[in-house]
Image (cartoon, rainbow, N blue to C red):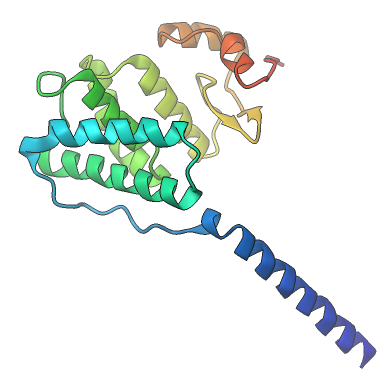
Length: 197
């Protein structure tokens, strides 16, 4: 009987602590919905992509509540994916570099499944000169990290550390091919020292 009372007391305290934790951190556990294809006017893609770019950069530099950040990011991702699906993947013959960057940002900041689905379009855009090699490298590393595989270019940080890296001794050669600075300089911004071993 005493064991049962003790168990119930511990269980009640656990439920109480969990409830308080979830309440205090409620904004961090918000599901903003699936990313759906929405109506977009293809003749206004310049304006839409300009707004996506400005929004993406603004929310990443501001100190907004997590729920507002998540909702705005979600909206940007829906707009980018809807433009691709309804209007086709833009090129620099149709839009500006800023607009192409908005496409990349929307896909880079979305879910791993969507990022992987649209990555071939990013590869093609890089091959055509519509996006740069560094953008390719950043998304490639993110996809590898999503899959639990070592990254190639050393662009991904996880839990305050450089995420596992394939052949670290030659990473700067790979980074140079992608137009990226050295990994030492990159990691300095995160107060991380590079140790190839």
